[in-house]
Structure formats: structure tokens, C-alpha cells
Image (cartoon, rainbow over all chains, first blue to last red; front, side, top):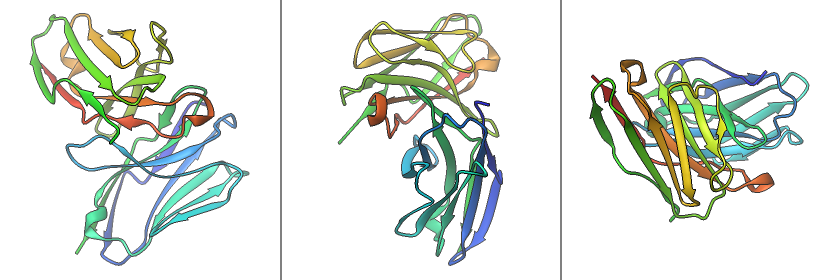
Length: 110
Length: 114
């Protein structure tokens, strides 16, 4: 129940395309869902986040879609760029900490 | 600029050694965390601390201990390093309660146990 399942494990997208990463959870006590972006040699950094009372949040080219009844949420990267190539982690907040998905390695081809 | 600093970027230790990984944050955060990152396994929580001298086990605490004597510093200790503890270790910190909306990560320590 303390898991966040993330897919796909890796993703290759052409420049200008849409990248979609999906996550699912079981624990309805999770109350906050951030996405983190990690570049090689760096620690993860917060990209965008959503609370479960909102169905969608958009920040620039990045959008989170949240389906509370299905216990699923996804990250959409519009007009994907080579600079978006990184590892992306979805996460869910527990009482004190964050549970992370296993990560998606995104490669955007020029 | 907020900062979480890990004392070493790279470490090579021998099997059986006692290893200390140090982390310092300058944001006056209540919460501090140690994660381990392995390919295909994501970020797994080893231990966390929500206050000075307080600690809680995460998902994979076996073989590790932690120390938090001051609010800004959180140490991870490998009591007797083993080769299966070769990994990237990430420290993070965050505010508490409903203000806990972002974990700030350090750059990581890549530990190799030989």
C-alpha cells in the first residue's frame, strides 16, 4: 500500500512530441503528489506538484493530470525538447516523507 | 539559494569498514531524509528524522544507522560496509506538516564498497 507504481521505465520521444509518464497508488492517505526531475550527476529537483482535490495542473509545457477515483496521475510534457532528457520520478507524500516511483528515463531525440 | 550539502561526491571504502556520510542543510528544515538510489529501483527511503535526536526507519534500514545531534546535520552510518551497499546515497530536507511540499536534495554521494 505504500507503493507508487510508475511506467514506463524508459521513454524515447522525438523533439516536439508529447511525453507521457504514468503513476498509480493504493494508499488513499497520500495527500500530495509531486514530480521530480533529475539530471545526471545531480539530485532530484521538484518540477511540478498537485493536490488530490485538483484534476489538472499546468506549468508551462508540463501538466499533471490527476484521477482521484482511479488513483492514478500522469505527467505530460508538451513540445518535448532535448533539454528535457532526464529521469523523472513521481512521488506521494505520507505523514513525514515522500514515497517515490522507480523513475522514467526520458530521451528526447533532436 | 537553498542548499543541502553532502560532504563527499565519491567515496571508495573496503568491506567491513565503518562509513559516515554527512549531510548539512541551511534552510532550518525540521525533516531530513536519507535515500538510496539504484538503477531500476528508484529512490528508497533508508531513515528519516523529523526533529533533533528523533529518527524513524524507512523501507530499507538494515545495515544502516543515523544520527541527528543538530537540526542542520543528519549523518548516515554504515556500521560494517558490504558490497551490496554500493550505491548512490541522497540526502534531502523539508519543512514539516502541511508545509512539507518539497524535498530539497543534495547532489548525492556515490559510494563504492570493494
